[in-house]
Image (cartoon, one colour):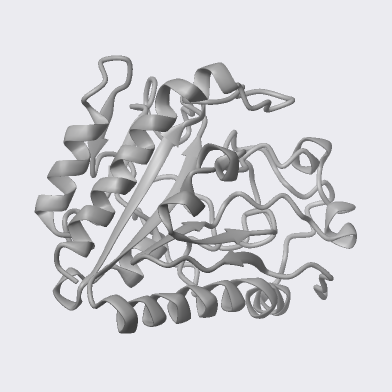
Length: 271
């Protein structure tokens, strides 16, 4: 199977301060020829990180650069290594070009899974441009500011038996077990994450940061990378039609903003 798309791989807004917010799983676009191969369930792209641009609508006011995926993670997962190696060996995960949903149901109605050539074409068309832009913006920010931060923004259903038991904490911070960000900054962020009794938080729990956090975070070189995996119940409806819930989001949004303000305070104090 070949692969073509007419959509750009990403949207990008350049900011003025030493922070890049990456949103690799918010995309919903699936090219028509690929969509026709999907099951009815998969066509709704239920495993999208819905509405994060709306939740992070303060990003421009903060002066952050923002990089947003356009294509669904079902086309290609931008937070996986290009060779498809597992980020969590021994645990259930979805791949570089997933073949099943988070509920462990097939994506492909006829079982016509993508082969190596199709995966390579998707990687060239979408994965490589996104990561090229990400790396270029980090380099620009580094040259301009010295010490910088990368925030990888994610969300997920709060209950997913395939990946974790029970209900996930609301705010899951990942720093690759301390390798991608200064421990002092991580501690500050955890303090904010757990400051509101209405929300639960954890550092390097089930979600420690995916490929982006692990690949680009290098605190010794002045690049501090953090992943935040939020429960979708904190701001939206977790089932179709996956609606954004402004009164619910209003509870957690200030907490997320405080975390990003703390990130900026940290890196600008070391620029």
